[in-house]
Length: 445
Picture 1 (cartoon, rainbow, N blue to C red):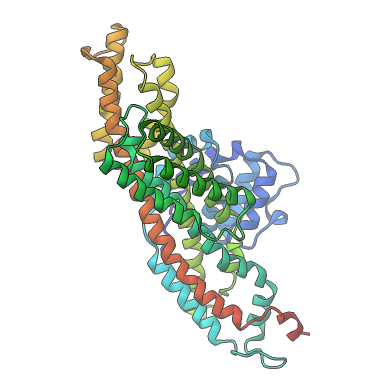
Picture 2 (cartoon, rainbow, N blue to C red):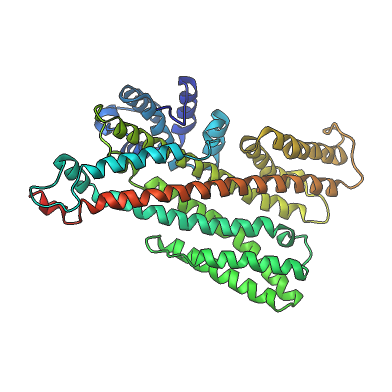
């Protein structure tokens, strides 16, 4: 099959060079345990090494196993440190296509579903001692049954996390006029629409959190209670209560989505997807199983990139909040305050947005900064000043904010649709597990 992610030797070297300086030997070993092939520490670790030589050794060995596996290994290294802003900058500068993954993975899911069906047909519905069907297959599934169960159950947890994130994001975008620090309190009609958005948050936060870590269970509870409290305050019709609700929701929207985003990344990163891919033997006499294995590997890495892209959007969204706070002051903020958050934001948006959106929002913001400099330091700027420099910056940033949050919402909705499609794998996985029962080990004695 044609892999969704491709990199020529020059791009692969750029990725390796941008990554190894942020990692240690433990990260490399962990990535080796998670990449889709069969090599390990004994195959790749020289007796003496630097991180530079170690990562190069891994790529050399894995490339001989399968050229794509070397790239998948580097992707595993990157995701382990993706929370590091310097790493993200290095990667997006070196190979920006890494965080521009395609939408949808219907062909991969269809191939995996077909492969699961082939495996299920090779096993009896009611296995017993001496009647296990393909015993090698039965044994392999039995030995990895816990990992395969974890994959099936984690698909729903990922969906629950995404549903809550989406509800919060809808509140943020559709309620942006009211939630802005410079906005007036909502009129009656606006308050009604905010109430509907809050109901969406409450419903998503009521999802079953069984299996999620305690900190995520607490986040669901905070979102549920925060939305309910804001709805109650808005229902009073009191302006001060509405102002309090606005401030508390704004704080919730700054705090909770990044935590949920980190939890989604961690869930998919730690999922035993390698064990799931290994369900499908590389038997050349069964093209459907070979195709299913490759499709499962490709699906895992594509979703990994989608979540990394989502995390980059989430980090950019926090910078939008920070710039928004600075520009809410009566006078234009000093460039020394604005530059540390605005410049990284604009650089990330250049990577994430399509060219037309960059031309519509990012470039005009840069022009507004030049006009700001011309007004405050004529020796630096090259554009004429405007009568209201603070207003000029706010107007330019309003377009950046609208463009960024609209694009992020689109990314969110498409990711949600694809995760819903991914959930269809749960049924075929459970059907296969039903033919290898929890007491399968005793049937092999």
